[in-house]
Length: 122
Image (tube, rainbow, N blue to C red; front, top):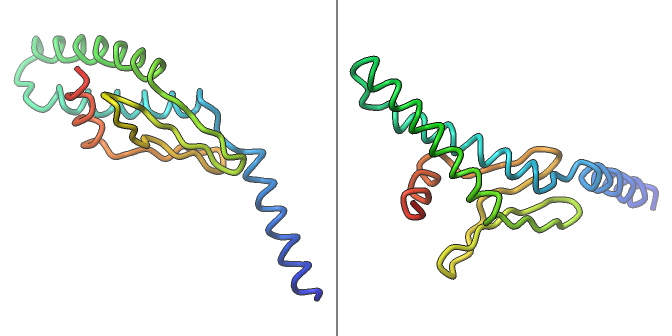
């Protein structure tokens, strides 16, 4: 009986920590914006051969991440399930999970998935 009570107490404590540290929509949005910025910068800097192209790539990255940030802010929907939160984006009638938040951290997709999704949108 004591073992069961200790197990329930530990589970209750873990659930309480998860509830208190559940990320909100701003955390999901910031994580996705950082991921998009990283993916776009690496994609645009792949074929740079001189300093002029580097400047254009930097300008393209700034414009792309600015527009992408606005798209993320408008399309992102975050569902809070008390112990975790799930970020989804609906595009052309299809809903995809793009982020999962747990213990004050937001887990996102990898760079290749983000680049494919951004190519479809833009």
